[in-house]
Image (tube, rainbow, N blue to C red; front, top):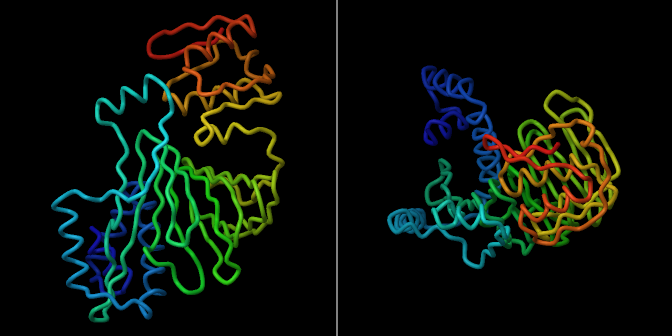
Length: 322
């Protein structure tokens, strides 16, 4: 399919091939997300082509060798597992991270020029790694970031699916751009968290200034602020960030500061891959101030049970709070 997408992007596809691409895009939302990711990388490749002088045959041979040997791991990547029985079991059963560097090459109609792309993809574990410019990225589980092996001369462009924290190396001459869910996040040197799940995108700023833009709006975020947008919302919602729960996958801590119980439950469901539900809706907004530091889920549930005098029932694959 990649070959057909390249022909589509270069205008070389026949009418039948154009229809085939359009049908493929209409068949599945995942296909549309993949195409946007592919298109962004293609556009970045076009910018890099004039400065890229790579031996195409040698590069392709290296890629083929990697395919045959399966050696796609990015050197120096740090893996941070959540300390829970569920994730340890996942590792044992082979549901572990797959980091794929050099996912594919995008060719131009210029002989001897090829752009190498890198892709970091996580499954059941959290991963920290460095980017070509020295910036740092930490990916939550089930996330992916793609970028050129060499950024262009005027900007640093990445595509994100899922959730990641970026600590960006300052460079005013080369803005750092993250594209996700039709949202563009632009910085020159700052740290921020981006979460893109389904149609919702959330950006939380820790340090520096962050510009967040959609097709219709651009806003500026400062430390302690966040923006939220969904596919059905034309307006970016700018808010103060009131808790540190978003940090759980980096710090291994669930920090609650007068936090509604439902917010903690949402993160517990995500972190431990369980389904905790409320059997009593009155419990949802109970405020909680505490820190769970790398605790197993059962211990957290026991503390919640004691603190709020509620029962915790495990039933039919669910954990019910009553």
